[in-house]
Amino acid sequence: MTFCLGITVEDGLVGIADTRITSGNELTTAPKITSFDFENGHGAFFVMTSGLRSVRDKVMTYFEEEVAGLEEPYDRMFKAVNALARELRKVAEEDGPYLERSGLQFNLHILVGGQLKNDAEHQLFLLYPEGNWVIITHGTPYHIIGESGYGKPVLDRTLKYTDKLAFALKVGCLAFDSTRISASDVDFPVDVILYSKGSYKLVEHRFEQEELAEISSWWQDRLRALVHELPSEWIENIASKLTRVQRTSRIRAKAALAADVKKE
Image (cartoon, rainbow, N blue to C red; front, side, top):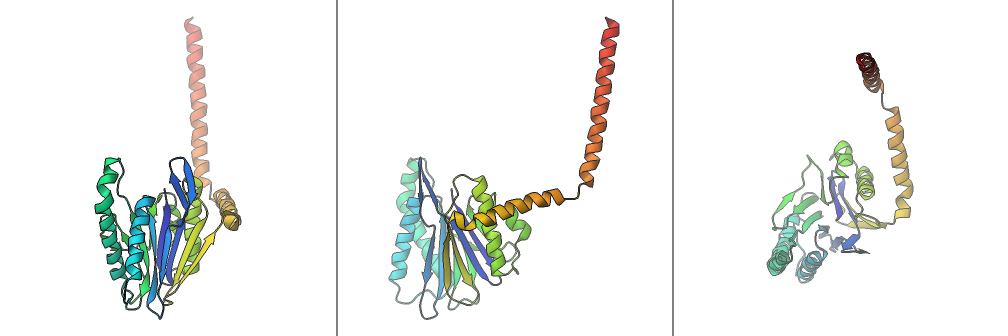
């Protein structure tokens, strides 16, 4: 399984991806983010994938060759996404039938984020295995491909499109940490990629577990402390009802026992 998270906020884009690769009983580490940084102000974008590694590698190899052969870089993000979709469909035609015979699905999902020179603003796209795509909008300014269940609560409760890029990165790392703790097939190292609004450049960094260990412990301790600080009047009301129920049950049990003894 994979954890790839793309976030779009007013200040830019955040991409976060784990590096755990599972193949049978083997565990390996490999990047799930590929970046494309063009010169002379043409812009930059990144690609994150979730699905069969063999399919991912073939699609990205085809796409990288496509990009390398361009006379001029793409000038709009949707053109780059359409080109990637063509390679995705090509690989689906080549490998899809053979995967199905082996009981496997062509299941590659892709997140693409960035800004090219003729784009009015940065954009985040979700590309489906069939090759169609959607733009991640301001209403829900993130999307997770792969293991999505554990990180969503953190993001849904905290993230807004108007948040700063640094805040989005914090929330994204907490979503990854929540997933890592609950899903055994998501783990460090974790790759982070940032795009700052209007910069046309990407910043990348890989975090090892020890680098974020203090943050993970702080978050866990703070959550426990907040639970202790949660108002408890409603709990006390339930506890008092439970006490009455238990007392009534004991009285009824004693009465039943006395009745049985009397019958004897």
